[in-house]
Length: 204
Image (cartoon, rainbow, N blue to C red; front, side):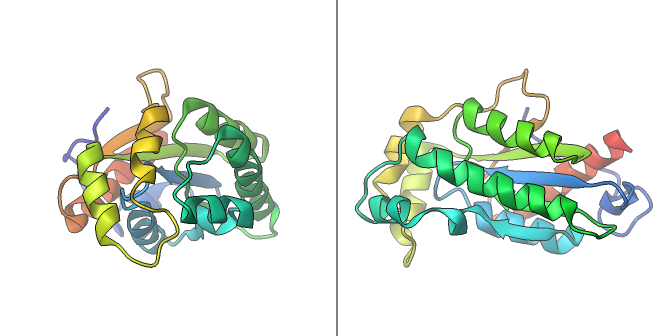
């Protein structure tokens, strides 16, 4: 399920991402544990694909943010309202009177149950395509990265608690792909765009 490096073209070519019908609605979730680079990858994809970007962390209620500031892991009960808020934003966007309903959202989506909530809601909202790109790296690497960053409410000690509950997408989750984020950010962004290209070409 790792994205391969093979693709025939990228943005702007006849068989690139924009070859998928722009009148169709699609939504991509960039998922993974804290420190995996979800925001950087999602912003890059949104720019390349001319899609709306939504930072899922911005929808956390204050109680969740306070817990993470204290280094306390969230429970599924804590995440329930957050996932519902993401679903509400995604559903509202697809109802907006516009020809283009293309959206990329960051959300850890650590468990299959979390992804099920998101995929089912987005399918009900009428998105033609719903897909997850799960960013993955060893716990030690994400721990190192999280310790090095500043001004983020998710503290480094949350990495271990997230790996305790982590359920990577399995082969029967046909709408999910795992991408390693061990390489440099430029390489990961390029690989993610190639993976989206292949996905869209397959669906077109």
